[in-house]
Image (cartoon, rainbow, N blue to C red):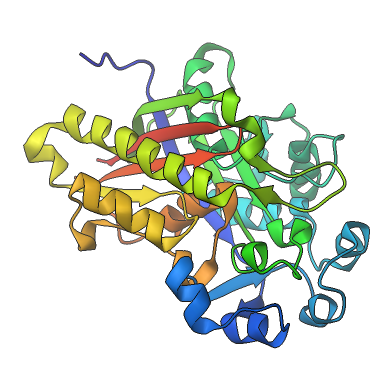
Length: 333
């Protein structure tokens, strides 16, 4: 039987998408062997956002990662601060109320300093900062470990997941170019101050034998073994979602909303079918925003923040490189 540990409260969730859009027609214009039908039949994505100028992508295909870093319109810290400000506004707090910043994701701007430090600088606060990364499962991992660190934390912790993955995408490779859209998620959480949203359960796990299936090299483009990763993702997310369904029981499970890793629509729909989730209980944004890496699932919840009401239960279930996985059960009270 599941025994709950310390309670984690979610006070505010925020998100940010850059304004530049990469639709399927733009990708087709790059002449890399793709078109609307080919893309939607494989990943179900129609649109994405990017921190890169479209002319830069068109002219260079982002072959030189250093040039892409220089051409970007926003740094990870800048998108992180924008998402954080929305999370703080929803929490009814000021940046000065935050006692710690934790950041993480798939592709930080630097090895050092910590991405969290740069976000804190953007927000104008002087607090302890650290990064915790587990690829696309980062947000759930943050929730899991913050809950476990309850006794040593300040009242409010800011978690930020900046994912501007188009910076590390080779736009001459159609298998990668069709996937990524940039997004950032941020959450204000507390283990001490109650709120209307609580994380009553979290999990985090890994299978390092598969660590080379998804790779972002230090000075090269993103790569993954797509078929193997999709098979793993469907199986693991189905297992995690079923665990939450069983814990809730039949009556409460009817209020469950599934939010999965926004990697591709085919994968999400496979999990919905396996776990018998009603279509209206499946929240996603993959079609309009692409694969937003670790930010995708929390951004979906942030976009629905004002729609969720007392009694709703959200199962946020994600997988990532490493290989890793995490799940969070959020309840609105």
